[in-house]
Length: 196
Image 1: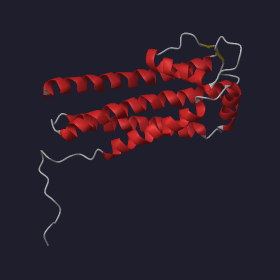
Image 2: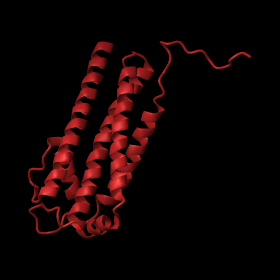
Image 3: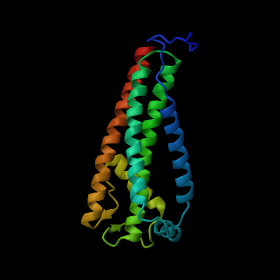
Image 4: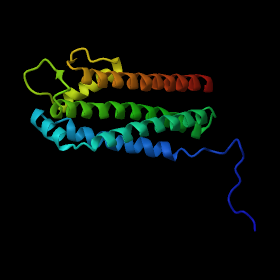
């Protein structure tokens, strides 16, 4: 019986980019949903939301971080595909950038929410925001994304060993993702300049 599937030669075979596209869409939806809920929250609402999250959140956070690492693998596959100078290669390069940036944003979002839970639920984790009112999610976002970009939050003091340990883990993870973002950007720029 004859195989009716179309033939694919080695040079035209396209690795399936749909997992990376799915990742980018899912990450974007999660980020928009999470921050549209959390960003406008004042201190009282932030406290209520942080207290509402239960202990199973640790598992959810771990799964999200694991998914971000998997997305980096998908990004590498897309970067390899982007070396071919065709429309699919260009789409693969764009998806690689979007996927890596989404992973970086998710890591920092996970830590922003984690810092809120630490502040409001656990007396061992102390943060000094040098302000009179309790912090809002936007303050925790500032902390997390500052660590994500500069590997420190200069205007926030972590005044306990457990909170400094978590901030150090976040800084190291952010450094890894930041290095990956730079590598993807360099690869993309190199590909664009050589493709012209």
